[in-house]
Length: 293
Ligand code: NAD
Image 1 (cartoon, rainbow, N blue to C red):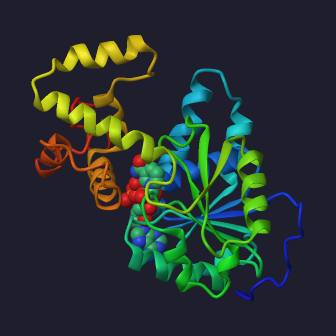
Image 2: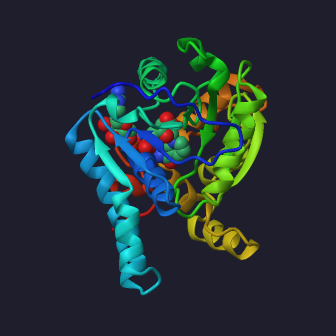
Protein backbone atom coordinates (compact mmCIF):
# COMPACT_ATOMS: atom_id res chain seq x y z
CA UNK A 1 0.00 0.00 0.00
CA UNK A 2 1.30 3.40 -0.94
CA UNK A 3 4.45 1.81 -2.41
CA UNK A 4 5.58 3.76 -5.44
CA UNK A 5 5.46 1.94 -8.76
CA UNK A 6 8.90 1.18 -10.18
CA UNK A 7 7.53 0.82 -13.69
CA UNK A 8 8.90 3.22 -16.25
CA UNK A 9 7.13 4.57 -19.27
CA UNK A 10 8.79 3.42 -22.50
CA UNK A 11 9.48 5.85 -25.35
CA UNK A 12 6.55 6.01 -27.77
CA UNK A 13 4.01 4.61 -25.31
CA UNK A 14 0.75 6.50 -24.96
CA UNK A 15 -0.16 8.27 -21.73
CA UNK A 16 -2.50 6.06 -19.69
CA UNK A 17 -2.72 8.06 -16.48
CA UNK A 18 -2.43 11.83 -16.15
CA UNK A 19 -2.70 13.24 -12.64
CA UNK A 20 -4.06 16.77 -12.39
CA UNK A 21 -3.06 18.78 -9.33
CA UNK A 22 -5.40 21.65 -8.43
CA UNK A 23 -9.07 21.11 -9.23
CA UNK A 24 -9.92 24.73 -10.07
CA UNK A 25 -11.18 26.29 -13.30
CA UNK A 26 -8.30 24.83 -15.30
CA UNK A 27 -7.78 21.59 -13.37
CA UNK A 28 -11.45 20.59 -13.72
CA UNK A 29 -11.34 21.29 -17.46
CA UNK A 30 -8.03 19.45 -17.99
CA UNK A 31 -9.35 16.45 -16.03
CA UNK A 32 -12.52 16.38 -18.17
CA UNK A 33 -10.57 16.51 -21.46
CA UNK A 34 -8.25 13.66 -20.39
CA UNK A 35 -11.11 11.54 -19.07
CA UNK A 36 -13.06 11.81 -22.35
CA UNK A 37 -9.97 10.47 -24.18
CA UNK A 38 -9.84 7.35 -22.02
CA UNK A 39 -7.01 8.54 -19.77
CA UNK A 40 -7.28 7.88 -16.01
CA UNK A 41 -7.05 11.08 -13.99
CA UNK A 42 -6.20 11.21 -10.31
CA UNK A 43 -7.54 14.70 -9.57
CA UNK A 44 -5.93 16.18 -6.48
CA UNK A 45 -6.67 19.28 -4.45
CA UNK A 46 -5.77 20.45 -0.95
CA UNK A 47 -9.33 20.39 0.29
CA UNK A 48 -12.65 18.66 -0.34
CA UNK A 49 -14.33 21.93 -1.41
CA UNK A 50 -11.73 22.38 -4.17
CA UNK A 51 -12.18 18.77 -5.30
CA UNK A 52 -15.97 19.10 -5.36
CA UNK A 53 -15.68 22.19 -7.56
CA UNK A 54 -13.35 20.44 -10.02
CA UNK A 55 -15.63 17.40 -10.18
CA UNK A 56 -18.72 19.54 -10.72
CA UNK A 57 -16.92 21.27 -13.65
CA UNK A 58 -16.32 17.85 -15.22
CA UNK A 59 -19.88 16.66 -14.49
CA UNK A 60 -21.38 19.82 -16.07
CA UNK A 61 -19.21 19.44 -19.16
CA UNK A 62 -20.38 15.84 -19.56
CA UNK A 63 -24.04 16.52 -18.75
CA UNK A 64 -24.54 19.25 -21.36
CA UNK A 65 -23.77 17.11 -24.45
CA UNK A 66 -25.77 14.18 -22.97
CA UNK A 67 -28.83 16.46 -22.57
CA UNK A 68 -28.39 17.71 -26.14
CA UNK A 69 -28.15 14.14 -27.45
CA UNK A 70 -24.55 14.65 -28.61
CA UNK A 71 -22.93 12.18 -26.19
CA UNK A 72 -24.40 8.91 -25.08
CA UNK A 73 -24.90 8.39 -21.37
CA UNK A 74 -22.67 5.34 -21.01
CA UNK A 75 -19.72 7.15 -22.67
CA UNK A 76 -20.21 10.08 -20.28
CA UNK A 77 -20.36 7.68 -17.31
CA UNK A 78 -17.15 5.94 -18.46
CA UNK A 79 -15.40 9.30 -18.76
CA UNK A 80 -16.55 10.33 -15.28
CA UNK A 81 -15.31 7.02 -13.86
CA UNK A 82 -11.86 7.85 -15.24
CA UNK A 83 -11.61 10.76 -12.78
CA UNK A 84 -10.39 9.65 -9.36
CA UNK A 85 -10.72 12.47 -6.82
CA UNK A 86 -8.01 12.43 -4.17
CA UNK A 87 -6.50 14.47 -1.37
CA UNK A 88 -3.22 12.49 -1.19
CA UNK A 89 -0.09 12.21 -3.32
CA UNK A 90 -0.04 8.40 -2.96
CA UNK A 91 -2.68 8.26 -5.71
CA UNK A 92 -0.06 9.50 -8.22
CA UNK A 93 2.11 6.40 -8.08
CA UNK A 94 0.98 5.06 -11.49
CA UNK A 95 0.85 8.45 -13.23
CA UNK A 96 3.18 8.80 -16.22
CA UNK A 97 2.08 12.41 -16.72
CA UNK A 98 1.34 15.01 -14.05
CA UNK A 99 -0.14 18.42 -14.80
CA UNK A 100 0.12 20.95 -12.02
CA UNK A 101 -2.66 23.58 -12.12
CA UNK A 102 -2.56 25.10 -8.62
CA UNK A 103 -2.59 28.82 -7.81
CA UNK A 104 -0.21 31.07 -9.77
CA UNK A 105 2.37 31.40 -6.97
CA UNK A 106 5.97 30.27 -7.64
CA UNK A 107 6.56 29.20 -4.00
CA UNK A 108 3.42 27.05 -3.86
CA UNK A 109 4.11 25.61 -7.31
CA UNK A 110 7.73 24.71 -6.44
CA UNK A 111 6.62 22.72 -3.38
CA UNK A 112 3.78 21.00 -5.25
CA UNK A 113 6.00 20.11 -8.22
CA UNK A 114 8.63 18.47 -6.00
CA UNK A 115 5.89 16.44 -4.27
CA UNK A 116 4.63 15.34 -7.70
CA UNK A 117 8.12 14.30 -8.81
CA UNK A 118 8.52 12.18 -5.66
CA UNK A 119 5.07 10.61 -5.91
CA UNK A 120 4.66 9.81 -9.64
CA UNK A 121 6.29 7.15 -11.82
CA UNK A 122 10.09 7.39 -11.98
CA UNK A 123 10.25 8.89 -15.47
CA UNK A 124 6.89 10.65 -15.41
CA UNK A 125 6.62 13.98 -17.17
CA UNK A 126 5.94 16.71 -14.66
CA UNK A 127 4.25 19.65 -16.34
CA UNK A 128 3.06 23.05 -15.15
CA UNK A 129 0.04 24.85 -16.56
CA UNK A 130 1.48 28.19 -15.42
CA UNK A 131 0.50 31.21 -17.52
CA UNK A 132 3.33 33.47 -16.49
CA UNK A 133 6.05 31.79 -14.38
CA UNK A 134 9.33 30.78 -16.01
CA UNK A 135 9.59 27.01 -16.61
CA UNK A 136 13.38 27.21 -16.17
CA UNK A 137 12.87 28.86 -12.77
CA UNK A 138 10.28 26.29 -11.59
CA UNK A 139 12.61 23.44 -12.68
CA UNK A 140 15.06 24.49 -9.94
CA UNK A 141 12.97 22.73 -7.29
CA UNK A 142 13.23 19.38 -9.08
CA UNK A 143 15.74 16.51 -9.03
CA UNK A 144 14.99 15.60 -12.66
CA UNK A 145 14.51 18.96 -14.44
CA UNK A 146 14.95 17.16 -17.79
CA UNK A 147 11.49 15.63 -17.26
CA UNK A 148 9.86 18.99 -16.51
CA UNK A 149 8.02 21.11 -19.10
CA UNK A 150 5.25 23.69 -19.48
CA UNK A 151 1.93 22.43 -20.87
CA UNK A 152 -0.24 25.52 -21.06
CA UNK A 153 -3.93 24.99 -21.76
CA UNK A 154 -6.35 27.84 -22.45
CA UNK A 155 -9.70 28.50 -20.84
CA UNK A 156 -12.23 26.95 -21.45
CA UNK A 157 -10.14 23.83 -21.89
CA UNK A 158 -12.85 21.78 -23.63
CA UNK A 159 -13.25 24.41 -26.36
CA UNK A 160 -9.72 25.72 -26.94
CA UNK A 161 -7.69 23.56 -29.34
CA UNK A 162 -4.31 25.25 -28.85
CA UNK A 163 -1.87 24.09 -26.14
CA UNK A 164 1.52 25.73 -25.65
CA UNK A 165 4.34 23.27 -24.89
CA UNK A 166 7.10 25.26 -23.21
CA UNK A 167 10.66 24.00 -23.25
CA UNK A 168 12.71 25.11 -20.23
CA UNK A 169 16.53 25.35 -20.45
CA UNK A 170 16.95 21.85 -18.96
CA UNK A 171 13.95 20.13 -20.58
CA UNK A 172 15.14 17.13 -22.62
CA UNK A 173 14.15 16.60 -26.26
CA UNK A 174 12.61 13.26 -25.19
CA UNK A 175 10.32 15.15 -22.79
CA UNK A 176 9.34 17.63 -25.52
CA UNK A 177 8.48 14.72 -27.86
CA UNK A 178 6.42 12.94 -25.19
CA UNK A 179 4.59 16.15 -24.25
CA UNK A 180 3.74 16.88 -27.90
CA UNK A 181 2.52 13.28 -28.39
CA UNK A 182 0.38 13.58 -25.24
CA UNK A 183 -1.22 16.86 -26.40
CA UNK A 184 -2.04 15.23 -29.76
CA UNK A 185 -3.39 12.14 -27.96
CA UNK A 186 -6.00 14.29 -26.20
CA UNK A 187 -7.01 15.88 -29.52
CA UNK A 188 -5.38 19.29 -29.05
CA UNK A 189 -2.92 21.21 -31.24
CA UNK A 190 0.51 21.67 -29.64
CA UNK A 191 2.98 24.44 -30.41
CA UNK A 192 6.48 24.16 -28.97
CA UNK A 193 8.14 27.35 -27.75
CA UNK A 194 11.20 28.26 -25.75
CA UNK A 195 10.63 29.58 -22.24
CA UNK A 196 10.05 33.35 -22.25
CA UNK A 197 7.66 35.81 -20.59
CA UNK A 198 4.18 35.44 -22.08
CA UNK A 199 5.19 32.36 -24.08
CA UNK A 200 3.53 32.83 -27.50
CA UNK A 201 -0.16 33.73 -27.13
CA UNK A 202 0.20 36.38 -24.43
CA UNK A 203 2.88 38.19 -26.43
CA UNK A 204 0.28 38.62 -29.18
CA UNK A 205 -2.73 39.24 -26.93
CA UNK A 206 -1.15 41.81 -24.61
CA UNK A 207 -0.72 44.58 -27.20
CA UNK A 208 -4.35 43.91 -28.26
CA UNK A 209 -5.67 44.25 -24.67
CA UNK A 210 -3.48 47.30 -24.14
CA UNK A 211 -4.70 49.00 -27.33
CA UNK A 212 -8.29 48.22 -26.32
CA UNK A 213 -7.87 49.71 -22.86
CA UNK A 214 -6.34 52.86 -24.36
CA UNK A 215 -9.21 53.17 -26.85
CA UNK A 216 -11.82 52.89 -24.08
CA UNK A 217 -9.98 55.50 -22.03
CA UNK A 218 -10.14 57.85 -25.03
CA UNK A 219 -13.94 57.43 -25.11
CA UNK A 220 -14.43 54.72 -27.76
CA UNK A 221 -17.99 53.38 -27.98
CA UNK A 222 -18.07 50.04 -26.11
CA UNK A 223 -20.80 48.38 -28.21
CA UNK A 224 -19.31 49.65 -31.48
CA UNK A 225 -15.89 48.11 -30.70
CA UNK A 226 -17.40 44.76 -29.62
CA UNK A 227 -19.61 44.49 -32.72
CA UNK A 228 -16.94 45.68 -35.14
CA UNK A 229 -14.32 43.17 -33.99
CA UNK A 230 -16.89 40.37 -34.35
CA UNK A 231 -17.74 41.57 -37.87
CA UNK A 232 -14.03 41.56 -38.57
CA UNK A 233 -14.08 37.83 -37.80
CA UNK A 234 -13.06 37.54 -34.15
CA UNK A 235 -15.29 35.04 -32.27
CA UNK A 236 -15.88 37.68 -29.57
CA UNK A 237 -15.13 41.32 -28.90
CA UNK A 238 -12.14 42.37 -26.75
CA UNK A 239 -14.25 43.07 -23.63
CA UNK A 240 -15.89 39.64 -23.81
CA UNK A 241 -12.49 38.03 -24.33
CA UNK A 242 -11.03 39.75 -21.27
CA UNK A 243 -14.10 38.70 -19.24
CA UNK A 244 -13.68 35.05 -20.29
CA UNK A 245 -9.95 35.03 -19.55
CA UNK A 246 -10.64 36.74 -16.22
CA UNK A 247 -9.94 40.40 -15.46
CA UNK A 248 -7.52 39.44 -12.66
CA UNK A 249 -5.60 37.09 -14.96
CA UNK A 250 -5.56 39.75 -17.71
CA UNK A 251 -4.36 42.46 -15.29
CA UNK A 252 -1.60 40.10 -14.08
CA UNK A 253 -0.51 39.37 -17.66
CA UNK A 254 -0.51 43.09 -18.59
CA UNK A 255 1.68 43.79 -15.54
CA UNK A 256 4.08 40.92 -16.22
CA UNK A 257 4.53 41.84 -19.86
CA UNK A 258 5.16 45.50 -19.01
CA UNK A 259 7.96 44.35 -16.69
CA UNK A 260 9.55 42.15 -19.36
CA UNK A 261 9.11 44.04 -22.62
CA UNK A 262 9.76 47.76 -23.04
CA UNK A 263 7.39 47.89 -26.04
CA UNK A 264 4.47 46.65 -23.90
CA UNK A 265 4.08 49.30 -21.17
CA UNK A 266 0.92 49.27 -19.05
CA UNK A 267 -2.10 50.96 -20.67
CA UNK A 268 -2.17 54.72 -20.04
CA UNK A 269 -5.43 54.27 -18.19
CA UNK A 270 -5.49 50.71 -16.87
CA UNK A 271 -9.23 50.00 -17.00
CA UNK A 272 -8.70 46.26 -16.52
CA UNK A 273 -6.87 46.87 -13.23
CA UNK A 274 -9.53 49.39 -12.14
CA UNK A 275 -12.28 46.79 -12.65
CA UNK A 276 -10.31 44.21 -10.64
CA UNK A 277 -10.01 46.71 -7.79
CA UNK A 278 -13.81 46.88 -7.80
CA UNK A 279 -14.04 43.06 -7.55
CA UNK A 280 -15.21 42.72 -11.14
CA UNK A 281 -13.35 39.61 -12.29
CA UNK A 282 -15.39 38.68 -15.36
CA UNK A 283 -17.14 35.40 -16.14
CA UNK A 284 -15.63 33.66 -13.10
CA UNK A 285 -17.51 35.79 -10.55
CA UNK A 286 -20.41 36.84 -12.78
CA UNK A 287 -19.46 40.51 -13.19
CA UNK A 288 -16.93 42.12 -15.50
CA UNK A 289 -17.44 44.27 -18.57
CA UNK A 290 -20.57 42.10 -18.89
CA UNK A 291 -22.93 40.54 -16.35
CA UNK A 292 -22.77 36.73 -16.63
CA UNK A 293 -25.40 34.31 -15.43
P1 NAD B 1 -8.09 28.29 -9.47
O1 NAD B 1 -7.85 29.24 -8.37
O2 NAD B 1 -9.43 28.17 -10.10
O3 NAD B 1 -7.69 26.80 -8.97
C1 NAD B 1 -6.53 26.52 -8.24
C2 NAD B 1 -6.81 25.25 -7.43
O4 NAD B 1 -5.58 24.83 -6.84
C3 NAD B 1 -7.81 25.46 -6.28
O5 NAD B 1 -8.82 24.48 -6.34
C4 NAD B 1 -6.95 25.29 -5.02
O6 NAD B 1 -7.65 24.72 -3.92
C5 NAD B 1 -5.87 24.34 -5.55
N1 NAD B 1 -4.64 24.33 -4.77
C6 NAD B 1 -4.00 25.36 -4.20
N2 NAD B 1 -2.88 24.93 -3.58
C7 NAD B 1 -2.82 23.58 -3.79
C8 NAD B 1 -1.92 22.55 -3.39
N3 NAD B 1 -0.85 22.84 -2.65
N4 NAD B 1 -2.18 21.28 -3.78
C9 NAD B 1 -3.27 20.98 -4.52
N5 NAD B 1 -4.16 21.92 -4.92
C10 NAD B 1 -3.95 23.20 -4.56
O7 NAD B 1 -6.97 28.62 -10.55
P2 NAD B 1 -7.01 28.42 -12.15
O8 NAD B 1 -7.60 29.62 -12.79
O9 NAD B 1 -7.54 27.07 -12.45
O10 NAD B 1 -5.44 28.47 -12.48
C11 NAD B 1 -4.60 27.39 -12.19
C12 NAD B 1 -3.32 27.54 -13.00
O11 NAD B 1 -3.63 27.57 -14.39
C13 NAD B 1 -2.55 28.83 -12.71
O12 NAD B 1 -1.17 28.55 -12.80
C14 NAD B 1 -2.98 29.76 -13.84
O13 NAD B 1 -2.02 30.74 -14.15
C15 NAD B 1 -3.11 28.77 -14.98
N6 NAD B 1 -3.99 29.17 -16.07
C16 NAD B 1 -5.18 29.78 -15.80
C17 NAD B 1 -6.02 30.14 -16.86
C18 NAD B 1 -7.35 30.80 -16.63
O14 NAD B 1 -7.92 31.38 -17.56
N7 NAD B 1 -7.90 30.72 -15.40
C19 NAD B 1 -5.63 29.87 -18.18
C20 NAD B 1 -4.43 29.20 -18.41
C21 NAD B 1 -3.62 28.86 -17.35
